[in-house]
Image (cartoon, rainbow, N blue to C red; front, side, top):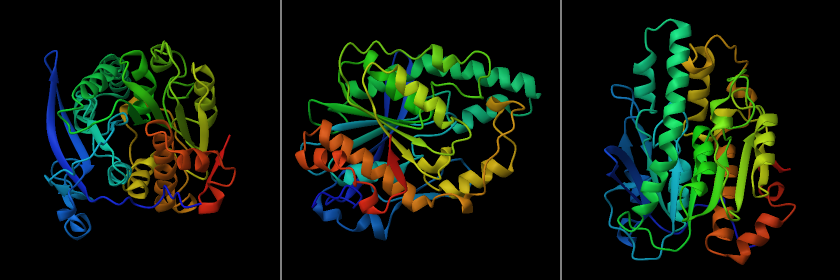
Length: 344
């Protein structure tokens, strides 16, 4: 089959940072887009450099800062980051989609980014830090769907064109993606990566994300869920239970031999940092048993599976691409590419 969603697309990729404001709330937004041919190859020679945390080593993304956009119809994809993360957590996925002709806009969910969460709990006793963290989750759950709606409303100013838009998110961002259709009529497709909202040991008593997930979509919204087989933060059974609650039957794929952070850039580095150092305050005294990264699926393979399935879903649903529908529906679509995943 000629359709190959795992290969990088034909367009150079540009990136810019902008700000969106609504209701006295201000969001920094990273925007990736298909760039003019004059920039071809530049993102590989001089990739954009940024700092996830001030003072920490810089990271790079395969995109040209402030490149000239390509004049084309490019549908909008809003990407929602995870708890205590940031808008540039998954640039490999974002730039892959942009290279295939999508505009991808990822807001920092103000109040729930890595620096803000760390500063709010730093130095606090465990019980107090846990309480502050859970309260922060509840507050962010109230804001996140409206953050996404604000980005969707700004589609034209972000350079996106097209009647259908999609929302993609990881973890808390996956919960946000599943919440989005109830808050904005423009959501036409969803991809939720290891989404929160199902049963998890993180919330042994009252799960604020399970009870606050709004699923009153009022329409069919084609949904893809990709879960991590060995997820110690949001276990696979909990994601399955979440999928069973959805008003739409979701396509459900499992990334085999994978953990919760496999969907992020620098997955191995972040996994080992998380595994070997103190846990975020949200987990309190809960023990997380995580295997060494060397025992898990490789980062490149995990990113390729995520990019392949996400792009095929968006191409099939947003663009109505018959080749994407055929690839997605093929029983051998994953094994033929040598990807460590399975459909359920």
